[in-house]
Length: 215
Image 1 (tube, rainbow, N blue to C red):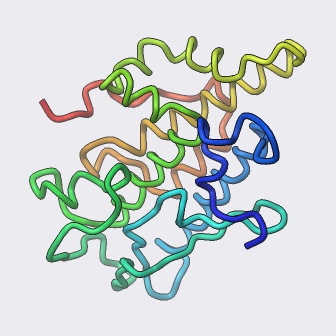
Image 2: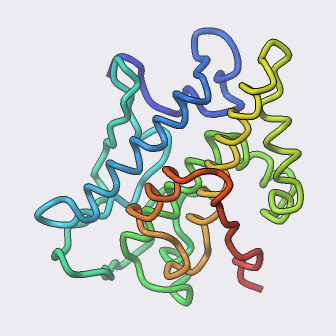
């Protein structure tokens, strides 16, 4: 693909300067495009496909920055009505792999495992994943969401109305990411629900429960 893979454009790599700069609108479009691709794999195909390795390196961008999901080496096929998949060992990439693929007490492997990985990709795109690592907790995002959205989109040259719109995009993406990385698979939205949330007004967004980590 002419624009390479998504990892070139994640927040904190080269995304804030030079040739790899992408607008928040473009980043949002890419996130929506990935969600549509996963929705198709999960419910649109004649045979359902669970990817099991969603990460920025496996999202390729064409000449228009339309995302294409690639590398199906770890993917599994299952019957259309199946929601759980039997796997012998953990599969995926550390940092994006769903907890149930490592610790079976969280639940069974399913298409919700892709949802978790997607959530981590979204949070990385907006810079929230880095902040979570620095704070050693997702709690920081809950307590400082307004501050995070404001600092992430701080641009001296932008008009106030434009800044507000960008902050709303970042808030929407961050909240969606937090919903997707709930530890219990049953608490995560489907990709169809993710798309529904992304299409909503920011005023209709609801934060997920704070205590989604195991104690």
